Length: 548
Image (spheres, rainbow, N blue to C red):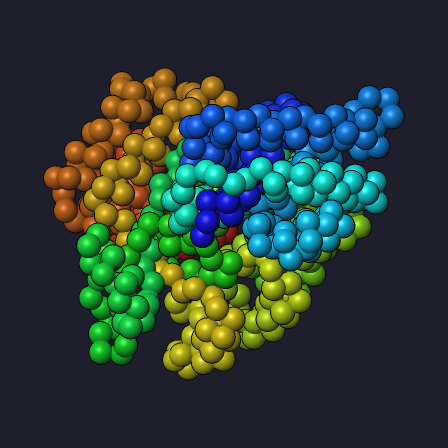
């Protein structure tokens, strides 16, 4: 690829950066654009010579001219759109300039014609204005026209510069384009007043540890913020043995596990669950009793609602979470999309704009979290399965995550549910299994559980009174419990799931007594304590006791 072509590719992002700078876009939405990355790409191509400095100045001037032409439409008394709309237009234009893939040969084939280039840009990113109003679409098209004029003018100035590293430049351009798309979607969402209210309710309702039906324990755990107590678990999956590149990488990182798949053309692999979920739109997550399935789903909902995903799941910050507990739907039909918000935010659901849920499902910005297939009566699982099939068929761009104990995805005879397995395979669902916590996981869980409990002190009199009666701080209590776990292998094995580890933490914090070494004994102590309190009239006996 010639240096001239590379320079043309650099003009697009440089012009995009200049526009965003001219309008002083500094909100959290702009953080996704990574202007430093754009500058780096431009610097790699516009090498430090006298001519390159001249070209950089020309691009800056072009950006200022475009900004001055756009400004009357988006600012002042006669502005046609809001600030949020302005940002979404600018992000859309910036992404289009990157997606266009302009080359000098391509411009020559267009006879360096402004009209032809304008049509090329509009076709390069056709879905960018799908959610714009008529006024926003008109302004966006005007900006594309202006960009076309300036790019044609710049085409004659790109000869004579040093060769850049082609592959690295183009890879970074692709990454920037993705970030600009996220920023544009967030800018569009910022104009949606209902989405802000809904996100707030989801955070408030789900950012707490799950209760278990045991009054004393529930009074402890229900005060803790899940987002603070949560630890990242490990998940395993299977992959083709023929994927030599991935298998080699797993061997280098010691993440390959021998299992029942040997000799069947498959390998079992292990990774952190957030990394394993990255770049997936459809997942089935299996796990035993208390493995942390529901907690993981709540964490995903809270993270999406607060737009605080990082690392491998950062792109999910544009998603709107819809959390569906199947156990709450026993005896009822699976809800239609317009009923999803009422499952968590019933008090504001009636204020939802028309087609609000469908809009996010169709855009691919919906995160549909369906928890607990095993908690449906077996005779109704087929009904749920049909509802899920039609939902995925009608809204294929949405992200779907379904959890279940392994027993919930078996046939009535206890064998393979072939229809389910065939369908999830054909629909490209990724299968993951949550693994037991390691000793390091347990230690981290104990520390975070006590830290979250300590933070709840100022908000709850029960927690405050309990802590004031302790002779040591929650941090010291956590340290003492971790020592017991290290010294007692049978207790460490008992703490291998988040549910059981939370029970141990609660029992230890409340009484600082000798801890049980068997699962049934742990259940028994919590049950007997709850029943004793009920008999004394302190609380009602638990109506259920969940382990999953």
